[in-house]
Amino acid sequence: MTESWQLLRPELFWPVLLGSALVFAAFLAKILLERNKPFLWARILLAMLAVGSLAMLLLTPAHGRERETGSAILLTQGYDAKTLDSLKAAHKGIRTITYDSVTGAIPNLGQNTLVWLLGQGIEPYDFWQLENRRVTFLPGKLPSGISRVRYDDEVDLGSATTLLGEYLRPAPGSWLLLKDPSGTAMDSLALHDAPEQAFRFQLRPKAVGQWRYQLVVRDSTGREQGSEPLPIQVRSPRKPRVLLLNGFPTFESKYLKNFLADKGHSLTVRNQLTTDRYRFEHYNAPPKNIYGLTQEGLKAFDLVVTDTDTYNDLSGSSRGALLAAVGEQGLGLFLLPTGALFSGRPSFFHFSRAASEKVVLGEGGNSAVAKHPYRFAGPFPLQRLFLRKGQPLAGYVPLGKGKVGTTLLKNTYPLLLKGEAETYAQFWSEVLPKVAKGRESSVQMTLGNPWPRPGHPLPFEMASQEELPSIRSKSGAKIPLLQNVELGGRWQGRYYPKEKGWNQILARTDTLSFYVHGPEAWKAAKAYHLLEANQKRFNGNAPALSVPELEWHPLPPFLFFVLLLLSLGTLWFFGKT
Image 1 (tube, one colour):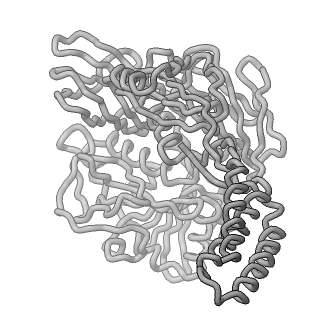
Image 2 (cartoon, rainbow, N blue to C red):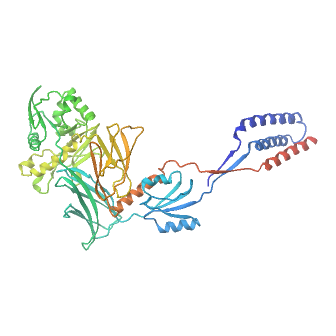
Image 3 (tube, rainbow, N blue to C red):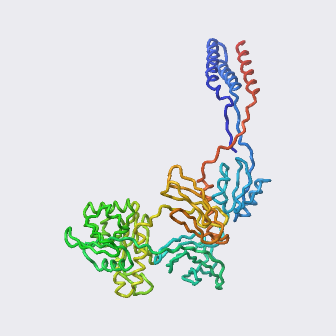
C-alpha cells in the first residue's frame, strides 16, 4: 500500500512561512525581554508550537492513501492450479478472468487494478491492454516437446542448412526423426530421459521450390506421437560475379577457376606475371581488364577471391580500395589461406592451435583433405560455415556492409583428383555465396512472429527505399503501413493471414513468402516464445507503470486549533506568574 503526505494549499507555503517567521520573531523578542521570569525555554517551545499550529491551519496538511481498486487473476494457457488456489485463499473474493487468445479480449480491469497473470502469458499484440497496470507474472509449466528451434528457412539450391533445437522433457526411449517432403526419414536422434535435450540436424535440399520438411517424434514402439512442420524456401543458386586475383598460379586457384567457369559464374582472372604486368582471363564476362583496384572498378563484382600472400602484396591504394568496397558497397572478400593468415597478416580472424589432421568432407573416407593445424577462436563476430563434427571448416566476419571469409582447409582440389567432384562442389557452393555480396532488393521485410496462425495478427517491419511503399496481400487487399518517425525508411504493418500453408505479402518490386501454421503446430515452441516475451515485459523490463492514484484525507483542523489554544493559554498563564 502506497502512502504519502502533502499540503493541500501549497501556493500559500512561502507567504505562510514568511509570516510565521515574523510572528515567531515577535514572540521571541517579548520572551527575551522577560527573561527574568521562570520557564524561559518552555515559553520558547510553546511559542513555536503556537506559530506552527497556526501555519498548519492555513496550509492544511493531508494524508494520501492509494485508492483501493481491487485486484484480479488473469488465467492463460498452462497456468498452475496450485498457484491459483493459493491466490484465492490469500485474496478472498478476488475476480478470476480467463484470457481468450483467439479474440484477445480482456474485460476492463480498472485503471490501477493489480493483475496476477498466471500461465504462459498473453500474446504480445495484447500487451497494450495491461498498460499502466501493476502486473505480477507467475509463469506456468511448459508443455513437453520441441521448445526451441533455429534454422535458415531460405537457402540456395546446393547449400546446406543446420537445424538446431531443444526438446523439453522427452519420453525415455523415444526418437526424433527428420523427414523430407516425401516423408522419407533423412536422419534420426535417440531421446533420453532428461529435463531437456539439444539436437542438431543438417539438411541439403534437392530441388528449387517451397517445401515442407518435418520433425517427427516416435515412441519406443515406433508409433508416431506427433510432428512439427519445417517450411523451407529453396532458391535457384545465385551466381556471384567473381574477380580472382593470382600472385602466381596454384593448383587450388586453377581448379577453383575451372569450377566457377563451368557453373556459369561471371569470372575475371588476373594473373600477375611480373611487377605491373598481368595476364587476364574472362569467362562468361565481358573482356574488361582490371589493373589497379578501385572502388568504381570493383562495383562490377560481388566477390573477390585471392590468397593471403597476394592480398598482402597489393599496393596500399589497391588494398584500401578493396577494403572500402567491402565496407561501403557490400563486396565479399574470400582469402585462400597461407601461413601468413595464421600469423595475423591480415588480422581479420583469430585462431588457436589445433592438431594437424585430415578431415572428411563427404560421406566416404575418400573425401578426406588436409587441414591447417588451427581452429577458429571466439564465437563472435565469426559466422561459422561448413561444420563437421561441430567445428567450422570455413567462416566469415562482417566488415561494414560486406564480409571477409576464409577456410581452414589447405587445398580442396585433391577431392577432384579422387573423384569426389560432388563433395568439392558442395563445399564451394555453400561457402562462396555466403561471403559474396547479398541479393539486392529495394524492399526488406521481417516478420514479428515466427509461427503465424490463421486469423491472428501478424506484425511485420519493412525497410524500403521507396518514398511511399505499397504493400498488398495475395488477394490484392491493401495493407496499411505506419512510418517510423525517427527512421523514415522503416515502416510497420499488420497482416491477418486467413489460410494455413504458404502465404505472400506483395510489394511493388518484391514478394515476401511465409508459412502459416495450424493451431496444433509448434505448441511447445510457441509456449516457450510466449512465456519468454511475458517475462521480459512484466518481470522488471516493462515500461514504467503509472503513479498509483492516491486519495487525500486532510488532517482534522480542530487538532491544530486545540494546540493553538493550549499553547497560547499556557503562555498567558506563564506571563502572569
